[in-house]
Length: 85
Ligand code: FES
View 1: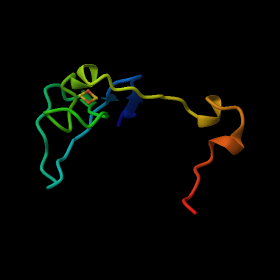
View 2: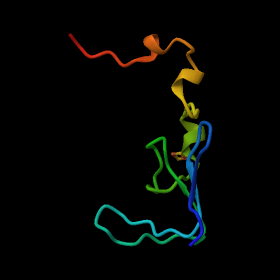
View 3: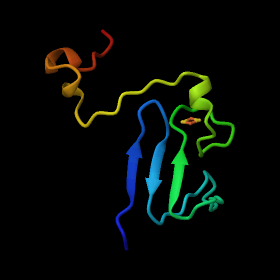
């Protein structure tokens, strides 16, 4: 079996490459146009979820895709999530 690759696109969907089955919340297999590639919505605005329909551009979806959040902020102490008091 080939390795399945999932790539987060800057300001866009996840690109899933490889042979995968995509199931809905009921466990039913979803129909994909291309068996070896799917674009999954990451902005939450697609009218064809789970798939990207391009709406992320209309809503000006912004995302950051980095391996390590400290790449964005060299001070790890300031990048920690704070819990409410
Ligand atoms: S990521 Fe493309 S419509 Fe949501």
